[in-house]
Structure formats: C-alpha cells, structure tokens
Amino acid sequence: MDYPKPLFVHVLIFPLPLQGPVNCMLKLAELLCLADFHVTFLNTDHIHHRLLRYTDVQSRFTRYPKFRFEAISDGLSEDHPRSGDRFVEMFDAMEAVTYPLFTEMVTSGDLSSSSDRPVTCIIADGIFSFAVDVAQKIGIPLLYFDTISPCGLWTYLCVPKLIQAKELPFKGDDLDAKITCVPGMEGFLRRRDLPSFCRSSDLTEPVIQLILKENHELPKAQGLILNTFEELEGSLLSHMGTLCPNLYPIGPLHTHLNTRLCPKLASKPPTFSNSLWEEDKSCMVWLDQQPLKSVIYVSIGSLAVMTKDQLMEFWYGLVNSGKRFLWVRRPGSIAGDCSESQIPTELLQGTRERGCIVGWVPQEEVLAHPAIGGFLTHSGWNSTLESIVAGVPMICWPYFVDQQVNSRFVGEVWKLGLDMKDTCDRVIIEKTIRDLIDERKDELMARADLMSKLARESVNEGGSSFCNLERLIEGIRVMSLEASRV
Ligand code: UDP
Image (cartoon, rainbow, N blue to C red):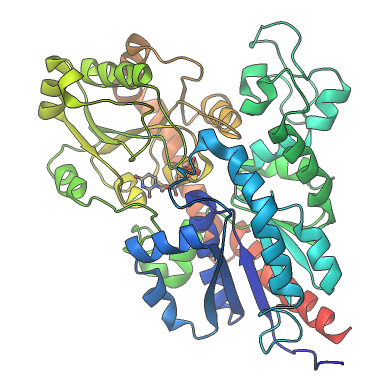
C-alpha cells in the first residue's frame, strides 16, 4: 500500500550516548526547533533517565510543540560504568542491540513512512556507520555530525594514508618522530600528537577498525556538521572538504544557541544545563569569593579516568603551586579506592586554604566566572571550545581519542595554552600552573582574548558559522522535501 508522503521536515537526531555529543546535539536540536522543523531526539534509556534526573530538559523543550524525545536501549546493564576505559564494550553492545532497534524504528516502526510522523532527514553521530544503509533503505538524506574536533577527525581520515605510507604502526618507540603525511599538519605533528589509538602496534584492534569503517562511510552522507568555526580551523576544513564535500562548521554550538536565543545576553553563560551528573552550585559561591583570574579550574571531563598515582601528582602539583584551584572529581573518575585517611595532611591543609573540590559543575558558568585564570583540562573538544569562547588559557593533559591532537593545536598552533601530554609529575604540574598564571600570562591572555572574540563573531548575524547554519537549515529543507516527493 502507498502512504501519502509528508510535506514537512522532520529531523531525527541520534547522538552517541555520551555527555559531550548529547550536549552538543541537544543544542543543534534546539537550533533546528527555532527553524520550525519537527525534531525527534533519540536517546538511549540510560542517558534519558539521567537527563530527566539532573536537568529540566523535558520542560525546557515543551516550548517547541514539534519536538519530541524517544529512547531505546544501549544494550548494557544499568550498573555498567560507561567510562572511557570501557569504550569498546559500549560499541559492541550498541551494535548488537541498539542498531537493530534504530533500524526497526525508522523502517517499519514509530518513525517510519507508515507512521503519522515519518522522518525526512537523519542527523547521526559520525561513528554510527550503519546509518548510511538505513537512510538509503528508506530514501531520506543523512547528515553526519562529528562532535569531536575537526583537527582530530582529519587525522582519523588520514589513518589509511598513514598506514599506506608506513607511518603506522610506529616503528621503534620514539614518540617525538615527526608525522609527514597528514596534509596541513606537516612540521608540527609528532607521533605523540596522533589520536591515542595510533599508539597500538596492532591495526586489527577494534577501535582502529571502527575508525576505518567510519572513514569509509562518512563521505557517503549528504553532509558533515562540525562543531567549530572557520576562523579557528579554516585551512583544515579545506583539506577535509576534498573527502567530504558538504561541510557545515556551525560552532561553537553553545555560543551559537545562546546568541540565537537571546542576542543581547549571548556573552552570559546559559542558566540551563544538559548535565548527566548533579551540578554542585556551591562552587559558584566559592568562586565569588576569589580574586580576579586567580583560580585554576581542573576537570578531566565525563569519560577520562585517573589512577591513584596520577591523582596524587595532580594534587601535589596544585597545592605546591600555591595557586587557588577548583577541581571537579567526577564520581568514578579515580580508579581504585582513595579514602581521605590515606591523604597526607599537607594536601588536605593546602586544599582547605586554597581549594574547592566538587563532583560536577556547571562548566560553562564556571569558565565564564571572572575568578578563573586557567583551565587544566583533558582537552575534550567541548571543554576546549568552551574555554576558547570564555577566553581562558589552558593546560592540556589529554587522555584519549582526539584529545592528543587537540592539545597539540592548543599549545603549538593556536598558542592558547601549554601542552603537558604524556607527563604526570608534580614538579611539572606546579611549574606549568605558575607559567600559565604568572610568567606567560600576558601573552596567553592576549591570544585567548583574540580567539574568544573571533568565536563570538562567527555566530553573530553574517558571521561564518551563522551563515553555515542558514545553509544547513536550507539544505535540510530542500533535501527533505525532495525525498518526500520521490
Ligand atoms: N562538563 C560539565 N561539568 C563538569 C565537567 C564537564 O558540564 O563538571 C561538561 C563540559 O562543559 C563539556 C562536557 O561536559 O561540555 C565534556 O565534554 P568534552 O568533549 O570536553 O569531554 P568528554 O567528557 O567527552 O571527554
């Protein structure tokens, strides 16, 4: 039986079920709601429960009557930690359980052409290679949204080239050897700056296979959405455009959304949150009592895990620097047991005098606080962009995936901070903090101010990201209507 084809735009957004991508894609979802599209946001049950528990996301979106949430299983048990060190298990479970559910949903289920709300366009995380087949099967456009950094993504896309040129796997253990065949990064990219999985000697490892599959499928989508702005990564975007024709750099997304929601208040951080942990707002009161640009903010994001030894090096480095610090210790982010009775008195005392340790913070608000003078970060892409917008110089301690590339760009290309990768030593941490807050403060602050200004301008009317979003919205409209007429 033939069903009537819809003459409206209905975008299905399917993020990777992790804090960073979910946060980003919710912002994109709201931007598409502002364009008056129907939008369905597909979460995994686990993520959805946590969003409902810790945010007002449900009531916030009621102002968009064409918006809906849906949720499906991620295939893991409720008590699975879903942390960075268990990444492969998460992908295996999704492949076995989530992908078939997703396929069923759009081909014959609630969002299929036989339903009263058929989907006319899919926006999926770039890692979801299966989405190409699904979109082709039902004859609708697919756009990928890769929420990692474009500089990181470009190195992923060059992995086949690196293998062919025998730069991968590494021969010998010199991590400072230069990498020559990533176009646009010649001269400054070392082995240690490649994504963490490139350090493996075994190219058949699941993560590498996943990346190779992604590389293969990414160019088949009708477009690739990126959370960046042309003024930051323009030259890499032109290299990437040779493989993926329709690029839509529309970031920084958090600033873009704030600007469109309320241009006059765009420089203020939002009062809403997409956090998967409970935000401890007491840190804002603590920050209010600290002098201007005096505090180092420390966070390793939502996935990274520290060993107990690394924790102690960080702690000594922070306390010995004599600077004030606000440190996020996400539940589950320290491997093993670490009770207060094992902590040396000088650390507890230094923390009482100058520190504040909490479980999770409203990060955009924290970074925008005038007391913040630097960010000791794991170089996750969202954190990096949030720091850039806030004009806060960074100390980078990358953990995995694109973070090794990001920290090289922060330190060497954009000159927005200091890269501490592959070291975790209290003396180095102490010195790097002093360099950031005292010795090299003026030079780093000048760069951070400039880049923050460019980031904000890019999302203002007529700016590069603003225009790219307009182009994306028009592209989705045209492709959706074309697909519904076929
Ligand atoms: N974040 C937050 N509160 C915290 C720590 C992190 O809201 O206490 C947010 C941060 O603003 C960012 C996201 O969590 O948007 C982390 O994403 P990122 O890409 O930086 O790193 P990942 O967690 O994916 O490693």
